[in-house]
Image 1 (cartoon, rainbow, N blue to C red):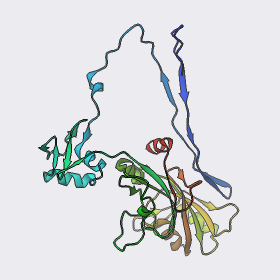
Image 2 (cartoon, one colour):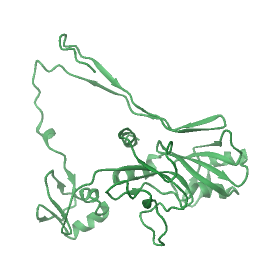
Image 3 (tube, helix red, strand yellow):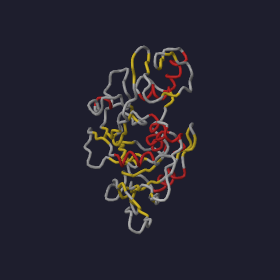
Image 4 (cartoon, rainbow, N blue to C red):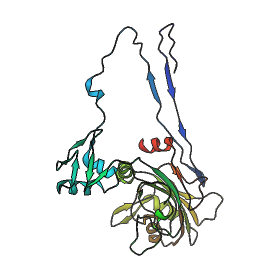
Length: 296
């Protein structure tokens, strides 16, 4: 957008950015993970003839709720922070705070159980998960976890966004952004996932139709949003798009129809793919990718 000072004309500029992602073809369908950011349109006013007074409210720096401040520091979750606040182990500027809605101001010093804390910088890591790793921060049986693979990704503590079972491979997001994690895992947002499923035998078209119609489980009706054979592959390989996040739901759906899942690979999660990312490797998300996730 340019401002022509000589004529005091107002020009309108537009920006449009797109995030192009991986895709795969299944039969006559092509599942694409391309997403675009909203178009923003802005206008620059001619303010030479008047001076605008900025309200005092807009001059205030951003404050943050105390439990969120503690959670962002990595000390504990928000729910746990409420308990610690109630028990009087949190101090702000030397004063014990037991008020749940207390707002921390810029420059305040917060101590948690005698230790000075401050919010962490949000980090977003994309991992191409291999088989044999648990999608948790720690395992009581001392099995390998995805945290072993991203140990050098960030100085802050990361958490997997959702879970992939031990034998499932593919796209897994890890972050310390609790708000985004809650958004991406909450059923109301219906975050899309695409899986490449390899089965022990050929899948009939009737069974593919059954996946679309839905199967009844104790959690409710589970159905795929899209399903099709994968182009150029045997009929025992199918692509499944789904937004349900129930435990092992893809495997359970095929098992209900009499199939055994030999391989399960998540090729897309919330618009993110593992394109150019080798199995077992990770990368930091770009600013554009993060912004796109927050716009979902």
